[in-house]
Image (cartoon, rainbow, N blue to C red):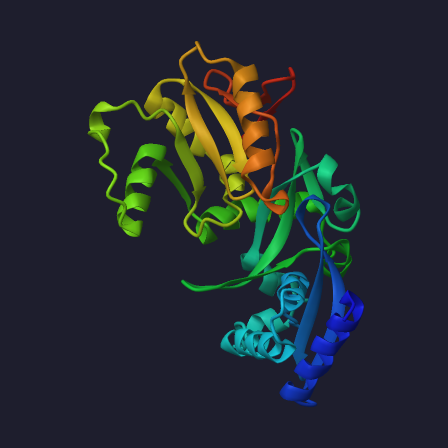
Length: 309
């Protein structure tokens, strides 16, 4: 079965199982860094919210011999386990006052997302762009979001600059920042997975790398734009900071002792991106520098800077 036939067959079988109350649509959904996924969007009744189930990996399973009926059954179970209506005001997506508390931000790479950026409001920041989304539902098990498009600006009669101000107030509240030492994270990971490798006393071993993300670990790189996060950390270490964008979900922070090669760090980021980070999660191959004296972030390879105030 060719790919397009597979997509339509899954859609038809899902529609048959769900019934006439549901509307199913296949859509090409642009994701980070130029990735295009095939989403099966499902809405119920007059709801304006249509969660998307991505089918690309399902086709890979089908080609490996998994029965189509099994795939469809799993997709139905996945949808039904999350088929809970969001909070009532999320049904009124055209009501800007109702949506304001749900507007948050994240970072993407500018040059890798030129087509997507034509469709969505954005604010430039160094080699990145701040983009905006609605947090429709968030709990311990799931996060439901919707990317804000240019059409929303017209409906809400607002601007990217206003979205920026709102998101910078909301994001730290909805997704508080977390900074952890790399050594402590490795120790916790080993304990969770039952590893028996004996570690040296972590209190006596230098652990210069720290991880900055948010409490849910999703799209946490934007935390470096939160007010005073880098400033307070730099003051605590009494050092300027080297920032390595390890993914859209987190950045690594290294207090700058003055003897670290920025070129070597840049090569490290590029190597990790190429070998370890999925293409859809990559943020940048650049490294950033936070300077305490000016409270600014600069690209290590350029002289430009941007204030965090």
